[in-house]
Image (tube, rainbow, N blue to C red; front, top):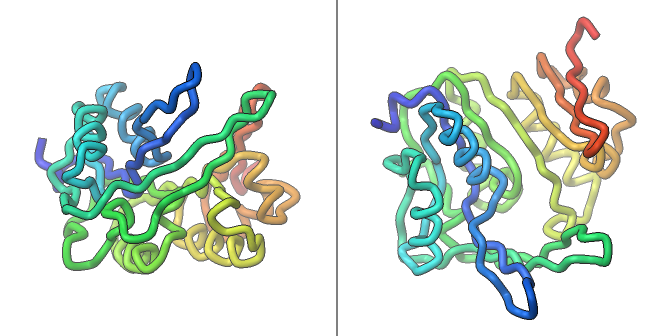
Length: 221
């Protein structure tokens, strides 16, 4: 595949989750955007990943995990891979401690972000939050002639200020056609429901509710 011709681009982070498992720490490829790209490729959709992938051993693991995804437009550099140390509570819910600064994972810059516009750009999670790359990514995405699908996938351990987080979220929601978020995301950002997010301009807001499924909200209800 040629990245510039792929129908769907997914922009964001591919990182490594360090997960405690049976008394050991296991390195698992993670990152919301990377997982989205992998899932789309598995469905047979032409998808190109836009993000930084290190030349270190973790980067090699990421490339292997995303072997069905077009990586021709990804940045490769010698900067290290971002890491997420995962802690699990008694219910199995995860919390994260991130190592993000100075990594290739968030080294977004206009000098390498690709020209052209796919049909759909899926973007979200930490890449829309971690500066200075987030501002570069926003300027680039805003200039595309694409349907933007935005998934904030809130990580309050990176930015605990809900007001600032909401400000960033709303800037992305304003340029997006579709916003997908969890019920927990809504509550952290101070929204009572997806209808409030719809007022920002998206044509569709999808709210996931765990075991209770999901809800799609449009201007028609």
